[in-house]
Length: 134
Image (cartoon, rainbow, N blue to C red):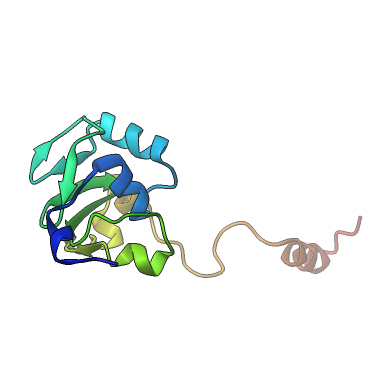
């Protein structure tokens, strides 16, 4: 339970990422922080023991997305997902449409339905029309 004095409580950054279920383990949280993929209040940090609390804003690059979270409560344990979602407010920008994500994906031509390699059934039907029997 949270009380009036808990708003000043701070938690280690790696523990917060673990408690909020951003990552599966504290080891993964530490690796994410040490690679520089996490910013606290717009400042890059590589210290896993950096203290964060209510009101801090985290910006992280995770799973190919940019996530921006405002911390509401530093948490005390890794609880269920519903409890973890109450630890932060997601203020991330909306993700880009699929065509704008990468130049590679945009360069792939669209294929109409039925185009491409025939199925085994379609190949047998074509062979039967040609009169080719195995």
